[in-house]
Length: 548
Image 1 (tube, helix red, strand yellow):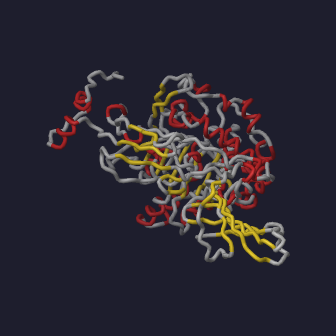
Image 2 (cartoon, rainbow, N blue to C red):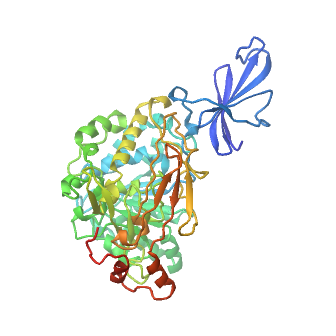
């Protein structure tokens, strides 16, 4: 028994939550009296222990203590929703990313919308700053007061939220969040950058968090302009020797929603060593950016018929999001809702992304390096890639926006579920995420396996469970695009054969297929590999560039 958390229940028994091996559940200690009734006040003659694990297994041993109790699993007994486990049975995290938000809130409603959603996920982040900034859309003022209004709504629900998350990862208090709200300069772009420019409280907080002794990266999520970041980077350059300044920049992970002032391109050119995710396109041509996949298909007109817009309509949002003390602070959208949200969707711990690998994809999109040479001006700049996704109309769409809208149904359902958490203090009144285990690996961290081409491998998720006692369904599929190195994925990445090993697909076998055909592989091994894509295509029998 690795860890326990005692909960004293009224008079009859004491329950503790234990991790026994890989099985997380509740161990109940019943005191049985001579009258054969559970009563903590009567003369105890025996002890009975009952183990409620994720699979509903029931265990009974008597005359033991928890210190030397050895549990023998027997007598399957379904848990069901009428016997939901507590918050200790929910998913835990190994760590949380450090996050710092720069927002031009109140230039339009979308920043406020994104902040509402962000707060509902704030138990997954170590938030270290929320700074109001300018942008090309709001050049002469900043609006921290509007951040406080949303945090006031959060204050009314944070206790409810904490009844729906693992006790090791509580939501931050409203007071903590209020202390993190600061302001940048109320000027546009480079008007606020220079060695002669004073530092605002927003500058100082960001500088302090970069200089902090933590070894964990600091994710700077930019929902507006970048002049606060630019001024802090200039300050670091002037303040420290080159090697120390470089080591501080190495801590940064920046994700910006395109370029919204005239300092962004300068940052990428002046400091190409910074890990920097951003869609790059002509000025103000936002319909070309990956992040618009969050909800921009109707407004910008891309991928018509592919994304399902039903859970982005104002009527759906009114019914499912704009309810309760926090949800009611979510304003009606004007252009597209939540354009800034992909910055933190990228960091949400759901098992679909790896922070240091934008090319793997996530709810926040999929990005790849723009320069692989190591000699360019943007050595660590990640920009848009594409995914091929079957849309709502059954057709396949290939676009950068598809790397985000492919997940829309799921991230909107998750948003609505968290709104329900904010409304209900009772754990049983809302739904909660399944707890994932694959091949005895618990949690959302990447499962990395070294295997030979052509080798079979079994993925076993049978230990996964639902903390509400709901049944689980399993879907296994091959995400091809992260493996590819060029546009024509089908010429580079072969299909995997996936075989279900049980009726509900809890266990599957993947047969790893050779990427190249035998003739092409043999040529490569003999040192006569093709040296251009046309020869590769010919080797695959794909002379037609438009071959299916």
